[in-house]
Each structure stands twice: as C-alpha cells, then as structure tokens.
Image (cartoon, rainbow, N blue to C red):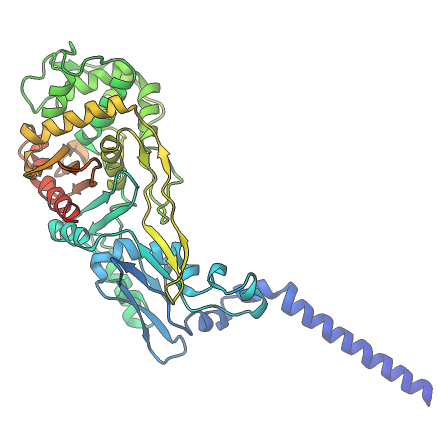
Length: 485
C-alpha cells in the first residue's frame, strides 16, 4: 500500500514540476511573443489605461488626454491640432504614432525608465509611471505667423535659431487635425480614408519629409563652394563666364531671367540670380568639391533626426558636367527639405558653423521635474568664417536692393535669397517659390533666426519674382516674431 502511495505522490510531484516548468515557459520564455501577439489586447488596455503625457509649446500643453470611459480609456486630444500637427504628429489607438508622438512615445506613455524613481523599477514592478512631458523649442507666435502666412496653400516653413540649432517653427500646409485619428471606430477609419485620399496630402509633413528642387536658393551652396575652393577669389570681380552659357557637352543654352549677367561677378550673380554665372562656376569647382560642400551643409544625410526622422536632401554623387551645372542652380536631381534650406541660411548667419537642429528642449516628469535636456552641439562646418562673412554681405545686398526686397525689416539686418524651382514634364507645373533668409537685430551680436519658406502653387511671371513675391513676405512675418523678444 505504501509503495502505491509513494508512486502516486511521485507522479503528483512530476505533474507539479511540469506545471511549474510550463508556467516558466509561458511567463519568461514565451512572454515576448505572447505580448506581441495581435490577439493579446492586454498591452493595449494597459497602454491607454492612464492619461498620456503632454507636448508643450511656450510652456503650454498643445495636447490633452480625453477620458472615454471605454476599454481603451484615454485618447489623445489636440488643442490646436492643424497648427501643431507637423510638430506633434498623431497618437492613434488605430494607426499608431508619428513624429514627436512616436519619437518620444516612451516618455509620453510613461514607460521610459528615466521617469521611474529607481533603476529597473518598471521592470521589477511591471508597471509604468505617469506620462512625462515633452517641452518643445517651438515659439508659438512664429508658428502662428508661418501658418497664417501660408493660408492653406501647399507649402512649408522651417525656422531655426542659428547659434543653437533650436527649431522655432515647423509648419506644413495644408494641415489636418490629429485628434480625428486618436480613437477607434468608423469615424476614425473614415477620417483616415478621407485624409489619405486627398490630393493636397494634408498628412504629409512638407517641412521635414518632402523634398523639393530648391531652385536658385541652392546658389548659396554653390557660391560657398566657389569661394572655399578658390575658384572665386574676389566676389566683386568679373567671373568671365559669358552669356549665353552652353551646357557642357550639349547645344543647350542656359537662360537667365535677370539682365547684366554676362561675365558678372559672383556678388552680382547672387543678388540678381544669374543662372549662367553660378552654373559656370560649378563646372570650374568640379563635382568632388561641389559634393563636399553640399554634404557639409547636410545634403545626403539619411540619419538626421530632430528627433523625428528627416528625409534626406539630395545632391548627386556622380554627374556629368552638364548635369552638375543644372544641379548647382537647384535643378536636375537636386532636392531639399525646407528644414535643410533653413540650415543653409543658418550656417551663413552663424559664421560658417552649422548647429545640429533639434525640436525637443527637455523632458520632464508629470510633476515638472527635469529628466533630460537636449544639449546644443555642432553638426558640421561647411565653410570658413571668411566665406560666411562674404555670403552674409551678398545676402544682405539681395534684400537691400536685389530680388529679396520684400523681406526687408526696418532697423534689422536681413539677408536672403529667392528661388524658383521648375518642375513637371517640360517644366509645365507652376514653379515652387522659395525664400531663405536670416535676421539679426542691429544692436545684437547674434542672429535671431534663419528661415526657409517654400510655396508649391506659386504663380510667377519670372523666376525669382515668385520667391520674392510669394515666399519672402511669409519669411518676413516669421522673422519679425523672432525679433520681438
């Protein structure tokens, strides 16, 4: 009898061990795969069981969590959704997260370990902290000026503080309300369908995710290459580049919209945007030096994040001389985001030093305690201070009595460059109007802001009038707000 009891006890012990081993398998070995299983709603329920943290502009929250009292309890709301959509992105229970809502999701959802009172606290307790706050570098008045200036037209604005890299405005137009995508159900899927099917692409962040041919605004990069390489030693001396200019290896004449471009100096060519002079200089500089200078400004960098991912601006690594000539006046395959072109202006304004652009100033707990702060850092140095100083003066001349006069601000030193980019089959589309600029109060030693504006559907009678007439007034309004402090 005792023998049967022992066998039964041993069998029960083996069953217990098997149960324990199975529990270990489920809770430890298979935990990750089970957590990631789409059929497991536990993570979703936990994720939305507490309010999400806030994104702040000028110390005020532009997001808010709404209590739905449903299974997925809290939805993210937006106080001025269309205005700040290019900054915040959306946090959707159906479609996930984008932009800052994605890049700082761990902070906003409360899973970031730095929010916990002790190291490994979240892992040990399998809990999350109250959502932290993301304090942005955006200045509300500048964001509003850019948004109102575009007035619903397709385009974008990016503004940077040149000496620090702080992004002061980031606007894409037309925009949308991210709150329409926050929850679940037919209203959300219907809004998604409508937004994704609209021809104007309101969900496209044109400021950092869309690249355009930069047109004559790119001539600042070409001028920097010409000066840095020694191809031009005196910016005010005739270059000797004749008009008409025949693209190398072809019979194609490169036209000028400006007059007086024959053998014009670099300074004159930038002020009045002579295609022939800058194209001819680029061929003399050569593709290797042109590429080095363009990449010094940030072109071809696929890893740039602010922390949201920024689409890589492009300058071809291999080109024939005729392609180089066109690329160096912002046409052919050259493409740039508005943020990239703001970086070009910022480098000139800041004496040749280009700071890394960033959108998040600091991370705080729900109680306001600072967890981390974004440090200012050097990004690249595309040119010497001497070259930057010459380009500063040439950009000032362009605003004073060249193509950029509509950006002038009384009592303020403003430098700018207009641009119009042709596009479409046989250049049949309306040109993209560009304006890049920087502004510095006359009683200060540091520039206040660098800005880039692109307007997609800009009617124009001649090349740079479009940039000066459509984009420059928007840039001026944004710069005026930057100078109010």
